[in-house]
Image (cartoon, rainbow, N blue to C red):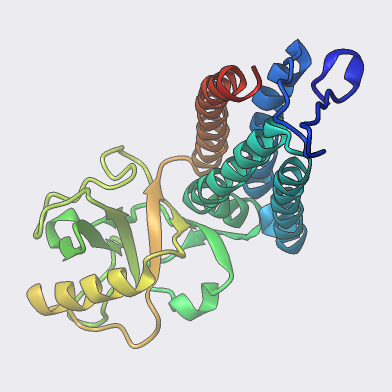
Amino acid sequence: MFGPGGQSQRSFSQYGAPSPRKVSAKPLDFVVLILLPWLIFSLIVSLYVFAYQEFAPLVWALVGASALLAFLFISMGSASGKAAQIALGLLVLTAVGMAVPVGLMVERRYMSSFWEVDSGAEYYRVSPLAPAASYGDASVMRFESGSFVDTQRSLGFVKIGDVYCVAPVLGQSTSLEESGPQYWAVGKNCCNQRGGFDCGDVGIQGASTGVVVSEGLGSYQSAVRMAVAAYELKASQGPNVFVRWTANAELYKVELWDRALTTTAIASGMHFVGSSAAGLLLARGLLR
């Protein structure tokens, strides 16, 4: 693979056993060592970010195929004594192992919310007094004019270093003595244990849209129970709906997309730098 003219160079001792070969590295070998692991890393991360929502089995199948390709390079290099193939296999295997958690992180942090907003139901002029069970399929809820987040009755529930913040969504005609809040604006690490709620666009005047949150529901529910007890509120009879308060749901969706693209590009760039350094070091150390 790496000998002059593409042919292997082999010498034999007096007993007929092959002696170690000195393989001359080609520029193409350097390029493959650098580019192939980077391309596989970028491909896997992109698949998790943009295709995992609808084609999860296919994504995992391609991840498995990439890992098998890495083991194939390693086994072929071990059998033939070609250090370059072993090095390439190790770099590809490392790229696969790094791409999976990075891709899943970007998908869960940004793209899962993006797809929920993009494909879920959207409701207009929602009253904070309306039964939350009527909006079980909602992804975006535009509350009626005059709705607001009661930041004075917010509460932060501390769990494993994070603060899960909740504050009730109320209307101008809401009577807390008659009914308990069903809709809660939420966020992480954006409030004090009591008060100081500054999550999402709660500080923007006129904001009245909630993007339904589907992660951390257990922690937010615990925070709601604590808020009900702390402020002597009436507990709601139906399920609670947790929303991220925003002034513009479309802009929020665009921000999720842009953050996913930016994070993917940064991860790909960082891996290219690392892959280039590792490829050059291995090429100089193993292929000469």
